[in-house]
Length: 53
Image (tube, rainbow, N blue to C red; front, side, top):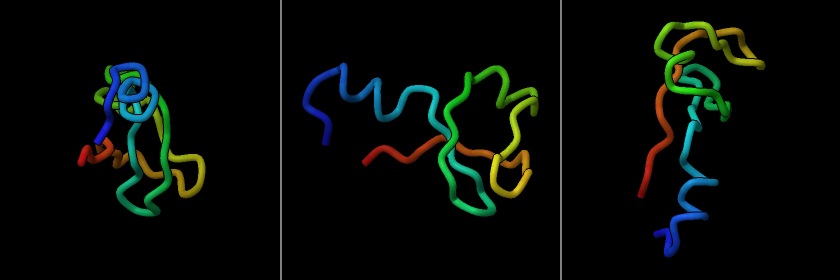
């Protein structure tokens, strides 16, 4: 889908999706793993990496 690395980095690097309300959140991997990041919209800690097509 993405043709050059700058665009891939901008779209997919450190981007996570809330499993409850499907909103996008940009945070570091270590903070997401240690559950320090929560969703702004619903407050959930259940995040997943954004899907790459």
